Amino acid sequence: MTDFSKIFDKAKELENLMKDSQEKIKNIRVEGISGGNAVKMTLNGDGEIINLFISPEIFKEDKSVVEDLIKAAHNNAKHQLKIKTTEEISKATGGLGVPGFKWPI
Image (cartoon, rainbow, N blue to C red; front, side, top):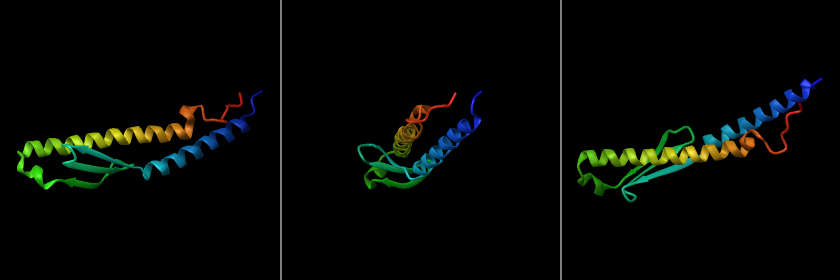
């Protein structure tokens, strides 16, 4: 018969790893860049914009160009955030084969 207390203990261990991982993800900062550094956007781990730099030089461009550069910087930052959060979750779970974590079945 399977020892359910061991399964429960391992599930709690995994839950704690995921909570730690979520806290680390909140502290992630990533930067998206477009237009050869003309637009830089920093996102936090929740995907919120925490900083935006727009070079005064690009305001000489057409409005649609400025909008496209902002969108491109945002998309670049979101891509970086996805990579960083995936890495953090993989560290915590080892892809769900958590190092040293074996289901007692």
